[in-house]
Length: 178
Image 1: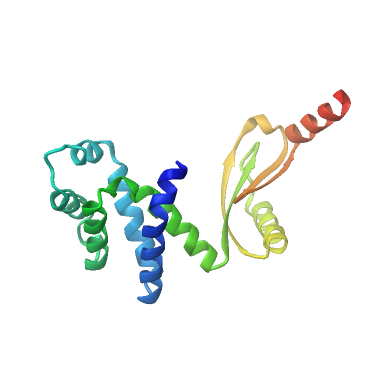
Image 2: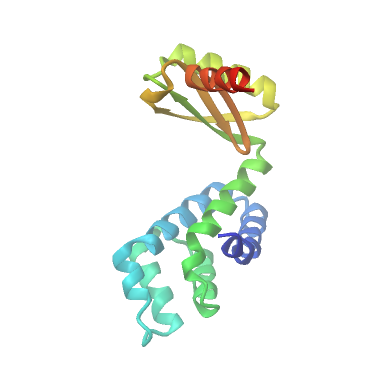
């Protein structure tokens, strides 16, 4: 995956810089997300992997499925990817574009994992604390993992804050065993 990321990074950065210059960051994020989803589809992947298809036909296939959701610049970007045999990188390019956008807008994606569904007040309290601690706006998603017993596990980029009962019990067991 590191190799794919390395290859995809210049494309994502070029798309990001172009979109920023055109004041179209949100539009480009949406277009790249759609193109990435289309490129990831198993049926589309099987179609695109046919050796007899030329790059123009491949690019046209993705553009046709996306329809009017892609502007001319995005269609040209996809055609360029097809010419360079890089259509399979679209999901990685989208992921990197999203990271560049979040960094530019000082937003961090945070996942809150709890043993039960969090109430809005609890989520808002955690978001406020995370904004203060991380110094960035927080875009939150929540999920449920009943094995946590209690507490919350927070994933923000490379940072993991384990405030779960399971995590505390594991740390206690490690201390007792050492």
